[in-house]
Length: 363
Image (cartoon, rainbow, N blue to C red; front, side, top):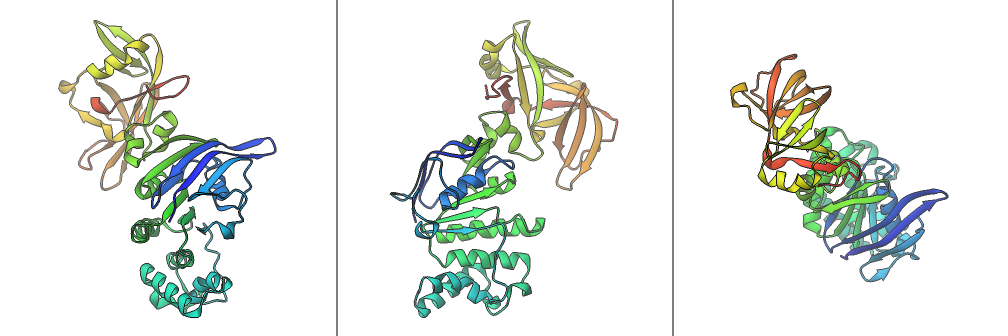
């Protein structure tokens, strides 16, 4: 097991600067997830750690060793890809044992490692089968087993669950977390799925356009995003954003936008007072909106019209028209809302987010 340190890592493809000055310290036995949209540089960063991509500038350390010049086989890492890449003519046992045979491990040691990994993954009964006789989830377990038998210092995962159906992805997320807790190996995991990132990672690294936007524990990023991109990327449904002007009215700070006029509470008003006269972006998560009666209206409520009702069982998503814009509210499954119905919604005063309109940084 070993920590991984990435120092000012850059990758250029001719004129394209794919990874820009990434700095990251991954602690020993930590599970870190790199997440972001397609083309954000997360997989390129992972491949540079693995030695599958050359480094334009910067350093990668595994343990105390700078590995920039080391080939992948000498970095003591194991990588699990999106494609299982199993040998179709080999049994599960032989697929898992192949790498150890190439390294000339003793037969008894190979057998011990393969059976131990199979026990961890629950695939002892499939060791004699060929990959074509397995389900997608079972093939993914074999690919994991092939990595586990290596006893590497670092596991690297490149979107390993993206080929699985939705139900199986949930099951495999749980299994991956259990396996990591059991093995205690340092792990770097790449995904574009923010749900995977939030549920798997000890810490999450959010990337955009080759730049790290924020690093932190999942709930820290969710509750205190550093900028509008992080706020909108993490969370499903995504955070609602409304352009508002900050004005003073009767000694109170108000956020005024299309369809909303909100009297901001004490601590929030103090924080935003220096931005009076400016336009900022208000962010509110769907679960922080609730329906209130007209007589219970207060300074943090507004009128909306229901456009779509999405009944999901555990909750109802209301797609709302607010002024000329739109919002989504996540409400209790007992709510009896109808399309074209006029509602009043209140915001949770403790859960308001504001972002600078130019830099998009959190205020």
